[in-house]
Length: 286
Image 1 (cartoon, rainbow, N blue to C red):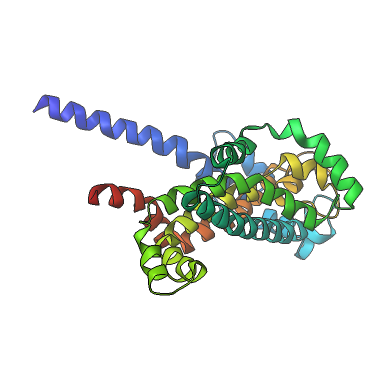
Image 2: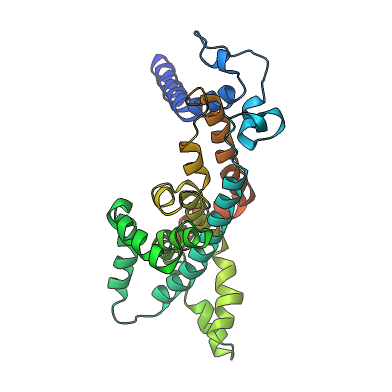
């Protein structure tokens, strides 16, 4: 009995520590975004206080905050981040799905080398290729442009999307397409009508990972887009007011940065769960 109680207490303690380290920073950021400067630096910190939305007004440059020098103004950066993340994710998942299907179904020469090359693009430190992309985009006229950022996020996530989707296509029996081909349908028809619906959970999971990487991308954006096409992470990093670093505004901007990812995963949660359990269900049938 004592051993059981000790084990239970140990489990509760481990879960408690995990929750503190996982959700503690998020809770602290949300509370700090609702405080004024005096309450933010008060010690001991206050948990019960009157919420103050001035930081959010400054973040979006609305109301009286629009006339202050400390307003960050994230509207343009937020729109740019949404366009870049959605566009880059859609292209990466689209091309990655086609490449993953080809690598799964066709034994073309150099397939293994191709898959290794696709994966190796995620292994290279961004700083190692940053100068090359900077010169290339300057020559092509894509520096400090939304199109350039969409292309770079597509390149970054394409290899990852290809690898993930190949794994999901490997889990679909080839007999599904063979039956369609025997009955006179084209492979394209079998791919669109039969195979894709079976891996929609995998597409959602892949889109989720690619969206996170695109939304949080900082290294390339901070060099390739410095003024007109600044993304949200780059804009937040340069948040300086008349009195120095505006920590309350940065916390408010962090909440804004976190919300689209939370909303996106909430919308695809059903398909995401389907994709995560696909391999387990296939293994149990085998």
